[in-house]
Image 1: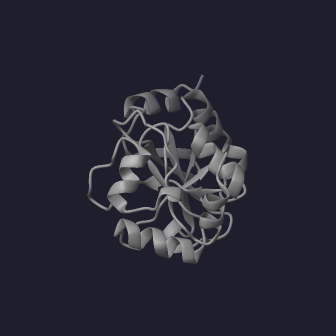
Image 2: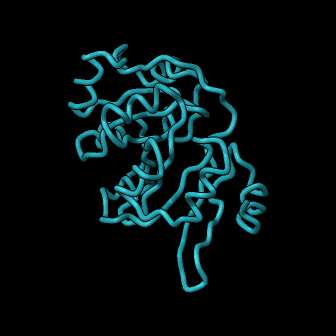
Length: 197
């Protein structure tokens, strides 16, 4: 259960550190005020968009177009293992990708609680640009100087982040390109895509 202080903080444009099924994330609402704070906190260039965390591909479809084969791919692997770059239904803030938005179905119970409370939230790693991610939300929050109510405790498995897939559609159908290999190996993606089961 999120505290009233945390809920109010996020609603006012605050940024919180939270655990995910891979590495700690930073959550804020996908509005201009909150994104200003997030990008300032991460010292991240505005031309490097951040992803959005959702509960399911159904929820993702309120923001982006999700081809059926992408739904099947997401369902075939552990939840939280992929981030998909997809066509936005309507252009979003450029810091969320504009017309091409990255979405990730979150698996960690705390991360899902955030989305259940606020709707889609940012799902970028909880570290300054170029720095090594922490293994716990508490550690990430301390490094970033977040107040206690802006840190949702929880450890993460660590290691690789999610595997980022760029999804495009053309006359030949739907294609995926691995933009960053993460917890799900490229070869597993390629093998499944050729022979979906």
